[in-house]
Image (cartoon, rainbow, N blue to C red; front, top):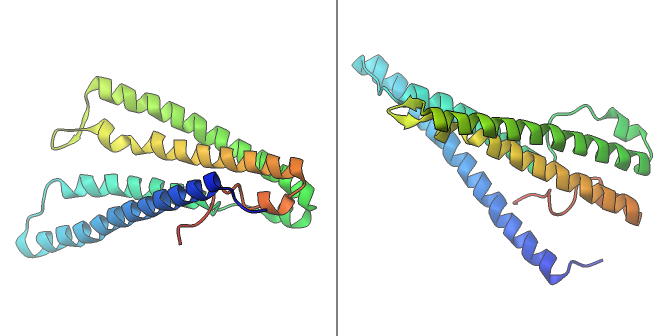
Length: 184
């Protein structure tokens, strides 16, 4: 079964998006790798540091963690206990995949929704993080990341439903082509 022109085009767009995610994650991590030792150097050798580096590093840890989770959800590489799917038939494993993918999507969706409400409240309240920068600008990663995770696992569960209905159980085990894959 070959992919149609629309599927090839969607695959190319997804590869570009995945590459952008990877580059963004690398930039965040690179900033942490540069800023943390710089702050240590300035404190040890000049008895001074840059005031905004410490709070920025805390924000970067949040962003790297959540963007790493988004990248892991891309190819279903989250930590999990997966003994059952090894013991089950392909059909039962697909049903289990649908249930766990749907549950993951639902939980991530709820977290995304509620964290989005939190960020909206923070924006309305006008709280600042540091250097008079609004806190909501740094917190926006929470609903966005969990929303992407919910979307990916929801699409993966739908792909497994499709595989189960069509009898192509090998295609649904790793997720749908829309929700999973690697940028390499």
